[in-house]
Image 1 (cartoon, helix red, strand yellow):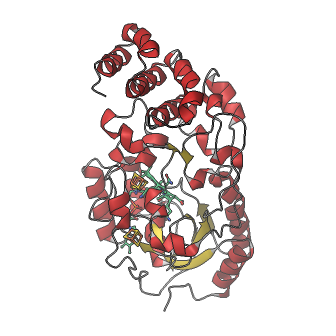
Image 2 (cartoon, rainbow, N blue to C red):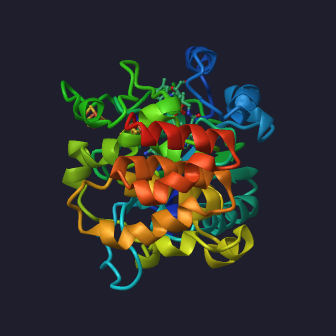
Image 3 (cartoon, rainbow, N blue to C red):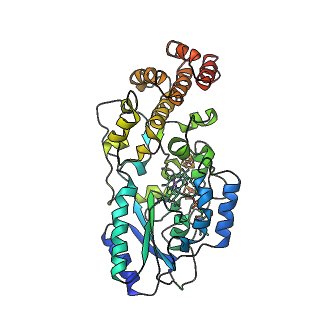
Length: 378
Ligand code: B12
Ligand code: SF4
Ligand code: SF4
C-alpha cells in the first residue's frame, strides 16, 4: 500500500497538484531514517560535497523536517518532467556546447514557487499547515521521492521514475497531516544496468549511489568558483552549464520520451550565444540573463565554461573559426579566472600567437597555465 495521510485534505491537495500540471504526485511520512542521516554525514565527511559547505551546516535541518515545519507529519512530493523536445537552434551568434535540460527554461525555482504557494494556500483553507520547497531548502527531496513512490534511487543518485525517467524536477510540500503508514520505498528498477556509471565523463559516480561532486561536471560548471582543476577539464567536454549524461543514458529516460508540459524550454537558453559572455560587465550580464540558471555561475563562470568548451573542440571542428575571436576576448578579459581558462584553451589549440601575451600576465596562476600550455603539457 502506498503511504498517504488518511484524510480527504490529502486527496484534495494531491488532486490540485495534478490539476496544476504536476506530472507525478505522492505522499510519504515526514521521517528521515537514522541510516540516511549517517550516510549523508559519511558523504560529507569524505569531502564529496566539494565546496558546497552549506550542505554541512544544513545537515541537522535535513535530518529533522520538523525544523522546517513544527508538527510535520507527511510530505506531498511533486515530480515535474523536464524531458523536453529540443528547440530549434537559432541561426545567429556563436552557439557551441550544451546546456543541461533543467536550465532550458526560465529558472524552475521561480516557475514552481507559485505552484507551491497555491498549494500552501489551499492547505490553509483546509486547516492544514504546509510549507513548500523546491531544491533550495534543507530537505532530503530524493529520500521523500522514493518514500512517495515517485521513483527509486538510481545508481546515478538520481530519482528515476518508470514513467518519467530521470529528467524529473522534485518539489515537496511539508504538511502537518499525520501519516501512520509504515515507511516504504519504491523498489529498485536498475537491475544489472550500469550505463550511468560507465558513461559519466569524469567517473564521478561511486558504487554506493552517491556521486563525488569534486569531479562532477554539473558541480564544476555550476557551483565551482575559480579555475576548474585541470585534470577534469577534458571531462567537461562540451558542457556549458550542468551535465545530463547520467540522465540521458538511463534507459528509463529513453522510454519516457519528451513529455514535459508544465515548463517551456527557450532556444536562447538551450543554445546561449557565447559572445554574450565576453566584453560585458557582471551587471550587464545579470540584466540579460535575469531569472535564468545562468546567474548561478555568473558572467565569469559562464565565460570560463565557454572557454573550456572551446578548448575541448576537436581540431577539425567547424566551430573553431567562430570560436577564435572569443579566445582572444577571453585572453584579454579583466577577470583572471577567465584569462586562465583562455590560456588553457589556447594551449589545447596550440595557438602560440594568442597565447604568448599570457606568459607575461599579471596573475601568477594565469602565467603558470600559459607556461604549461606553451610547453605543450596541457
Ligand atoms: C547539492 C545538489 C547537487 C550537487 C550534488 C549532487 C548529489 N548527487 O549529491 C551537484 C551540484 C553536483 C548537483 C548536480 C545535479 N543535480 Co542537484 N541537487 C543538489 C541538492 C540541492 C541537494 C542534494 C544533496 O543533498 N546531495 C547529497 C546526497 C548525499 O544527498 P541525496 O542525493 O539527497 O541522497 C541522500 C538521501 O536523500 C538518501 N536517499 C536518497 N534517496 C533515497 C532513497 C531511499 C529509499 C533511502 C532510504 C535514502 C535515500 O541517501 C543519500 C544519503 O543520505 C538537491 C535538492 C535537495 N534539496 O535535495 C538537488 C537535486 C538532487 N539536483 C537535481 C538535479 C536535476 C541535478 C542535476 C541533474 C543537474 C544537471 N543536469 O546538471 C545534477 C545530477 C548529478 C547527479 N548524478 O546527482 C534534482 C534531482 C532530481 C532527480 N530526479 O533526482 C534535485 C532533487 C533538485 C530538484 N529539486 O529537482 N546537485
Ligand atoms: S551529472 Fe555528469 S559528471 Fe555528474 S555524475 Fe552525472 S554524468 Fe557524471
Ligand atoms: S542508467 Fe541504469 S543503473 Fe543508471 S540509474 Fe538508469 S537504470 Fe539505474
